[in-house]
Image (cartoon, rainbow, N blue to C red; front, side):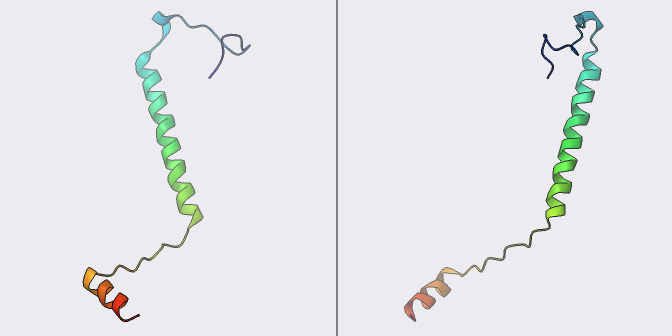
Length: 66
């Protein structure tokens, strides 16, 4: 975000601001960021973790045999 003392900052009066365009720009930026996150997750390609789940009866049998 530009600061008012930044040399690149240009004042724009409120009557010259198009709120609709501002919201559209922000939505585009958010969509691009979301797509980038999805690409980053896919590129990491981590193997899925498999968890073995036992039913309660199976767990009791397994603990009694030890």
